[in-house]
Length: 84
Image (tube, rainbow, N blue to C red):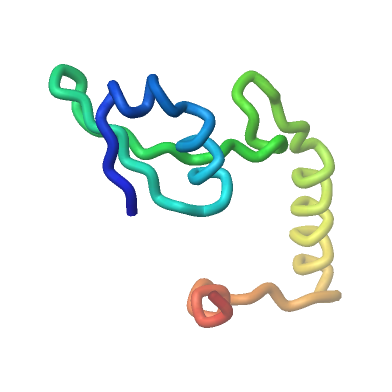
């Protein structure tokens, strides 16, 4: 983990952004504003980009229908947690 000041960040932005992009924890400390962690934003999570969840909802509803029809058995919460 690297802890930097706002002055260091302003002077070497590219360096610290590259470190964060490569997986390094970069903490930016500011006397007036507190601390911040620099993390890269993936394209699918980019600010301002909305995710179309229609397909996910349709698939979830299909699973519910198949479960109600007896075609599949849904996992319990404990089973899902065990998989994680």
